[in-house]
Length: 225
Image (cartoon, rainbow, N blue to C red; front, side, top):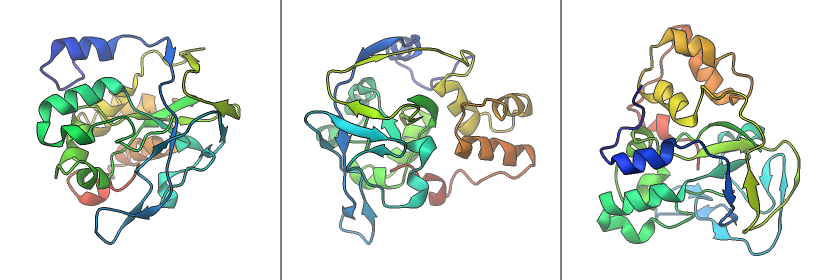
């Protein structure tokens, strides 16, 4: 089943390779502050943290989020693939200078669910529809829960220890979240995936009850920063 909505076959091949491990490039945290010259606060601007950083059940020490729905045990950390930044620069050259590590508010552990993109990304990158575009192109990043608290720093080795649900990649979960939204067979399977975060499980459970959210409203892109 084709997943990625992208014409660059080389990029798709890279993203579809099964991940086993690599070096952690950066750890970033941010503080809540007024942003974008509008009446909104956010911690989307993340700064590189030198040296070891404490990670607990709710995320990195010193990291904040503006709204309660933006955090919690299922959303403790956000990771974003640097491969996506290269594609964004090619596709949106007018904002190329903004597509740098940390741009999507990621900080770098059990994977829980895809990040649901926030409307603030539109302001962050000065592209009015990049929140929806990142969702449609499967370039949202993904979230972790913390299984064991400890310290992390740039240069640490990230190693895959197990893949309990090999049939459910992040891209495939996103496919049913945003594209094939009425596939009851898939949704019945997804609500039984114990590792899947509560937010995604709730969405699929509601859809099975014929309660569908409106994907076109700004509220659907109001979480995740």
